[in-house]
Image (tube, rainbow, N blue to C red; front, side, top):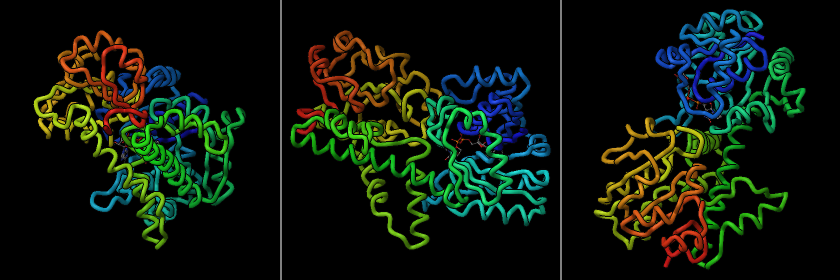
Length: 439
Ligand code: NAD
């Protein structure tokens, strides 16, 4: 199959490289010429495990190409995927569809008759209908418009793409279904379930999935708060409920609130869709509120661990990216936490294994260190914000000795209280019984 991928970001680049690896011929298009120049000289624009090797191997086989010229990729393509960003629109939180509609307008000029336009971007229900209208207005030949939302997770994107829990395809005609079946055939043979639905259903499935995962996170975070008040342990509770097959163990890690490029914007966009049709979505609304207030409460949690005041205190932050194994800083819980600490007069030193270049422009007055040891040196408190593997086996005793204060605020429950206390640290986890931050 000949595929054009419009938008070469986290989703477009991973999807394009994986499709090429399946044996398809893929042209990845992006407006960002620095990104495309970089890719053409094999410089990856993002940090994602396994991506560089996959891109290089398929580019060498001449199955994967990068260009800023949309027409180069689109003219020959049997399927044109739209994988551009759909950020929250300023002001109201609706999904901003400017990039999607611009892409549709641009591709309309070059698309071949019979090709399938496939939306991979997360878009509100009904966007496929709008794209159809745009194509018609722009004089495109007869083509199909399908929805194929993407469920990959940053940090495990390639594995997720190649071994998905399911593939969702929303299409209104058999030709589109056939083309997508062919594109995903290698996964189909591996028995990945492919779910064919109507286009609107596929569009909404993506929002429902992200909203449900966000609900799970906010739920366990509220249970963690309750644990702190009644001396119970949220880790044990998560295990105790997660072993129930009806609940499942995933997404039950109490922490500083969800961030990232998807959950925050997608939950709010779902609410906007629901509001526009006059349907209440009280659970998702509350989830958003719980998460917003949680993220903004994290600095206070650190302050409490330090006796209430952080002015002049030196605070070491371990981990900045919104989760491990990515350099993505979008909506990362580290952002409000650090900004708030700095505003309260703390001196913040931070380290992240890969996100430094993305993080630096986001903060003012923050020192960036090269490792965990440097962050801990002379610090009054150490705060674990992102649970990178390399923070799971820190020499706590050595860190404690180099610190000025002896406070460990573990927002990801990486360590046990006993372990931290043996190293001479006062431990403040999330929902860990006698966490100390509450009393
Ligand atoms: P991104 O910001 O990393 O990439 C988008 C790219 O599109 C950018 O490189 C931008 O320059 C390019 N672009 C915009 N308009 C263009 C145009 N007209 N022509 C060519 N290129 C254009 O975004 P992302 O994280 O890859 O997300 C893309 C979509 O996928 C979003 O809708 C997002 O919600 C969804 N999604 C993201 C993830 C994720 O983990 N990042 C997972 C599932 C779904």
